[in-house]
Length: 301
Ligand code: TXA
Ligand code: MG
Image (cartoon, rainbow, N blue to C red):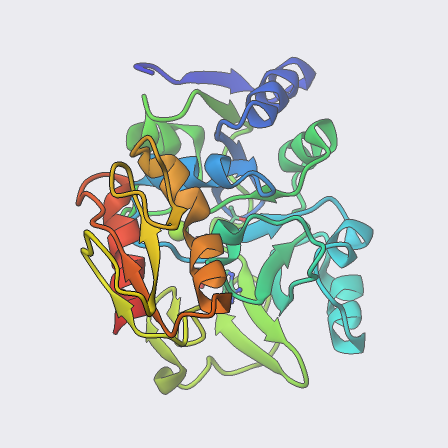
């Protein structure tokens, strides 16, 4: 792809966008907070495409956008506190981190293998129209290159991701201009990211967070992990890549998008296997390989 189409938000544009999403592509679409880079949250390869376009050097769990509370309850388990917040603030710029349902259908790359999922019901006609036209939950981080500022106009998106995404839907500047408030809701409610909705909560103490977007709760297998393995011992489950086949191959073709989409499922499978250790084949250090290597380096430390 060398150019990105920019289409003004209308029914025809949403039809084009929905077609792309259902084909496994990413589309930049406005929400009331910032422009998001949306992909089908049930399609691991499509979600890997988000990371590839953003050039994100690690896999942070992504927010899943749904059209309403009923759709949200099909993905996560709601307690009374979560229902109360949903009734009061949805649709709107509040994201809730909740226990993931086992039958949610959400790709493991979206949650970075965690047993929880971040959900929100956006209050923007373009994102709502795309949710309705695709009938899919949509994973969407901000539509910018990793490490740059979140986009609040289609021009910002184009400056950052022009040529890397097939389509940008333009509905003018976003009304909130700031990413959603994120809370985790279980027995109590904890603020993970301040944002447009002020619940009067203090931000989580710093020791709970290693770095922005890198919660200590990040999924890591409980078994020792050996990296850059070209063969495995009898007591190791071997996760392969390309020609180094292993027992579970992340991608026989050496395709980094496919490998990223399978990574967390592979780690979970390896954890459930009888062998007490995990060995992982070398993964190239370019493109999505950077994020894959970041994640497995964390899994091994
Ligand atoms: O306003 C917004 O929230 C925008 C628009 C596009 O909706 N989206 C956005 O997504 O800011 P993103 O991917 O930049 O923010 C995701 C953040 C992660 O960095 C992480 O802090 C948190 O949400 N998160 C997601 N899933 C989580 C989980 N299971 N547990 C803890 N935190 C989670
Ligand atoms: Mg961002």
